[in-house]
Image (tube, rainbow, N blue to C red):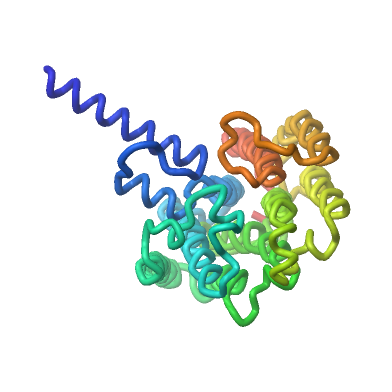
Length: 344
């Protein structure tokens, strides 16, 4: 009985550690187990953004002709691993070109894989390669079932993800990182997953992918506002650096408002089912977030704030999490009730 109790306590301790990493992006106190380490290295705390995009695609597809649960789940795994690979490659490329240092925000809000000594550059590169090989295998399986469009979606997503930080394009450095995220987390992820699950893709699905893509872009805008004082001296011209902080905050607010506007428009043209209007329940959170975007960043982080010096990114993520969850809830209601979108 004692052994069983000890094993149970150990399991609960591990689960609490994993929850801590997923909540904060930081390693838990004490000895770092293998799972916790890889959750930190892959920045698993932000993977729900991709899972939500996959859920939007699945709920659009589940009542459509040709839908396959197996192919949908395989595509969902593929886009999640693509996000993992993107996080690993971004850290690798940024440290290679010298933008990630011990004094840069990436190494301040959470341990940088290489700079913290958690893994070598070679190890990080091999990890990214391993994940990409698995994704390649998934793409080939989906290709045998759905044809060349799967390859177009997958390769397009990979190229844009790699070009975000990788030389020579380094889209983030040229004010193109934000549009990159809108395209990847919108039409490519949602549209590609829908196509893999059903074998076709009407224009309504591309339209329906825009609202959640705007939410993800708002998070990146918040992050780049936080990093602007560090980026500008390095010649990293993200959109907030180019616009200035005041205009960048207004653009971030505009992206959040754009989510609600595009949800309503998509419902009107039947690109989203009418129960998706449940997403409007996120407006009270928007009101709180809006106020925070109008106010100066605090001089010190609040107690137990996990990702300082990121501030506006965390605020934007709070809204994205609530609004995205409500959008998925509304679409789940529609799927259960059999409410379909046009063109499917």
